[in-house]
Image (cartoon, rainbow, N blue to C red):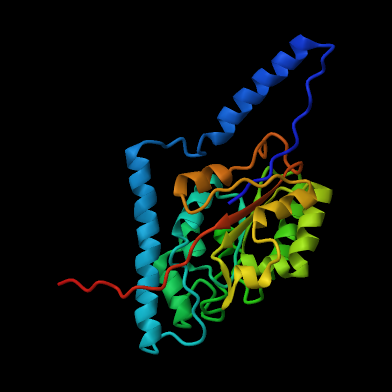
Length: 286
């Protein structure tokens, strides 16, 4: 994945002391920004991250079984192979931040704290589901978690995320809106419109691209002339840095620089790579 950071100011050669002081301040700022919000590090924390990712994987494998048995109706888009992105990015967010997702949002919902029971009930169309049984697999929603749902339209969540970020900025709230989207959304007008307005208005918006190398059934090199998607950030005054499918790297990339100190003056883009393997059958053990 990639992250956009505000441009650095140049040192004034006429004031070397001021330049040294600015460099010291930037160094301290970088250390603060790379520290996880929870302050948790070490083997135990890494074990917790792995457990959270395995929880998503087992949930999705169960969905494969139920969908194959016609227990779950409609469409089901699995999150297998991208677990590290959801867990890592959500580790960098706070409960006050908002999340907007895609139609492949089971992992995002679970990472955000929605219970597996509520998600599964929604997929069964039951009233106990997180969307009251009306949304199904592609429209999970929970306002209490500030999880503003999946979206069945490619790139459909991007304008919504920009609106949420704009609302936080106008209300001077130190929140960030995180929007997940796939590589296929890069070819949609909604992406370019959202990225342009986010940069123009300096919205506290975190754009997370989960590039699984296929837009539905079309390979990346068949639908994008420039396959290095992180380069798109430069056209909107953003900088792209590769991150990939590593939970802790995703967490560091997802932590917006200075978002708490300067609400409404920051925007981020996170094009990422998450190779999506074929679903594997769930191991049945006695």
